[in-house]
Amino acid sequence: MTTEGNLANPHRRVRVRLVVGLAVSALVVGSVALAAVGAACALNATTARASTSPSITPAPTASALATATEAATPSPTPATQSATQSPTPTPLRAPSVHDHFVAAGTEPTVAADPSRPGVLALASQNVFMSSPTVGCSVPTIRISLDGGATWGAAIYPWAHQCQDMHVVVAWGSNGRLWAGDAVGVGGGNVSMAVTHSDDMGMSWSRLFVQRFTQPWLGCFPTLTVDNWPGSPNFGTVYVAYNWLPNAYGPTVAVMATRDGTNWVHTEVPVEGLEGYQYSWRIGYRVPAAPDGTAFVAFYQSDLRHWSAGDIMNQGFGSNIGRMGFLIARVHFEGDVLTADRPSWATTVDHTQAQWQSGLAIDGSGEPWLAVESEGRVSLGRLDGRWLQFSIPGSYCIKPSLAISGQTIFVGWHAYDGQNQVSTYYTFSYDGGLTFLPPTLVSASTWNRSWETGPNGVGLRENADFRDGVVYYAYGDARSDNAVYVAQIRP
Image: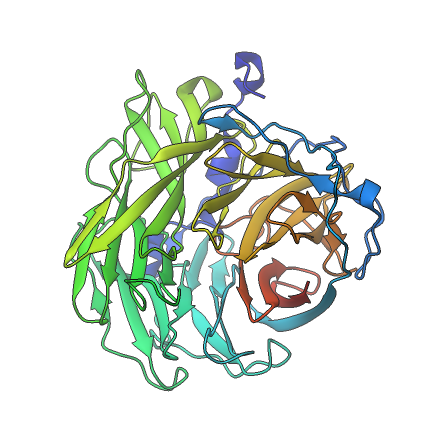
C-alpha cells in the first residue's frame, strides 16, 4: 500500500518497538523508561500458494509447490511478485522436525559449530520489567551438545550487568565462540563490544570495545565468521552495527579481525533519496562469502524529517519517501577493509513492513534476502529473481533464511484474525526453483495480545544450516516468554 491516502496514519509500528524488540540501548546504563504505543496490523488475506492445513511431516504434491518467478525488473525490485508453477518440480522429501524449548527469554539468535556436529550456541535477551515502563536486559548464552535437545546453564559473558538487548553469537571453525553486544560507555550511550571463548563459554577474552565510531543510543549489531574452506579470509570475524555520525540518521559501520586482537573498520557508503534529507537504518545482517568477501544487508527509510531524540519514529506516511533493503559487498585485503556502494535489493510497503530480514549466501557466492512486505514473505536475489510465500487468512512476519548448497530454508511467523501466532517453514531442494508448501514447525500457537510483545517484533531470530540440519531459533509465548530451537532435517 503506497498511496498517500493509505499513508495518512502515523507509522505506529515503528514507535512500539521500544519496549523489547528494538529497545533503545540506553538500557545498558541502568533502568530506563520505555515508551509503548499499541498498534494494529491489517490482516492479509492474499492466497499465494501455501498449505491451508499444514502438518509437521508434509507429503505435498507437485501441484502444491510454490516456485520462483524469473523477473527482468531492474533493482530496486518491488517485493510484490507472485509465485508461479514450475514445469519440472523438485523431487519431494518430507522434512523431520523436532522442536525444543531452550529457556525463558526473548529474541534468540543461534549459531552451529562448523567443526563439531550438534554443538550449538544460543543467545537471548532476557528482559526484566521492574514496572510497566521501566526495564533492563541481562543477555545470556547457552550451549547444546546434542543439536538443541538439551541445553546447559546460562552463561553470562558480561557478568550480570544490564546491557543492550541485541546480543549475537557466532562460531569459528577452530571451536572459538564469538559474542557481541553494545555496552555502556558513560553518558547514557553505548558502543559495540566483542569477546570470545575458547573453552565452551567457561572463560572469555578481554572485551574489545570499538573506538572507531562515537557512542550513541543505538547499535543493533550483527556478527559472523568466515568459515568457507578455501576462502582467502578464512577465520575472519565481521561485525556490522549502526551509529549516528550526524543529525541526518544512522549509518552502517563494519569492522573485522583475523586474529581477534587487531581490528579494522570501514563505513558502507550510504545516501538518501533526493528531497528526503534524513534516513533511518537498522536490521543489519552480515554473512561471509566463499571468495573472501562479505555482504551487508540493512533496512533503510528515507524521511523528510527525523529526530535523534525519537529514533524509532519514522513519522506519518507523507514523511516517508521510500522503504526497502539494501545490500553491499565488503572487501578485506591486507589490512584494509572497504565496502562497495550498496544496491537496493527490494522495496517494501510503507506502513506494515517489519525490520527483520534473513540474508544468506549460496554456494556460488550469491546473496539471497528474505523480507516481509504487505503481510507476505518475499525471497529474492540481486539479479531480480523474487518469489513470495503467504498463509491464507494470516499475516506473515519475521523471516529467517539459511542456505546449504542447493537447499534453501525459509522460516517465519504468521498471525491470524484472532491474533494467534503460528511458526512456519519451507524448503527448496533445487536452488530456489521450487519450494515445498509452507508447513507448521509446531502445532502450538500463542496469542499476540500486544504489539510490543517480545516475541512479536525484533531483529534477532535466525537459522543456521550445518551438516545437513537447519537450526531455527525463534521466540514463542505459548507458555510465557520463551525461546525455542527447531531441529529440521530436510
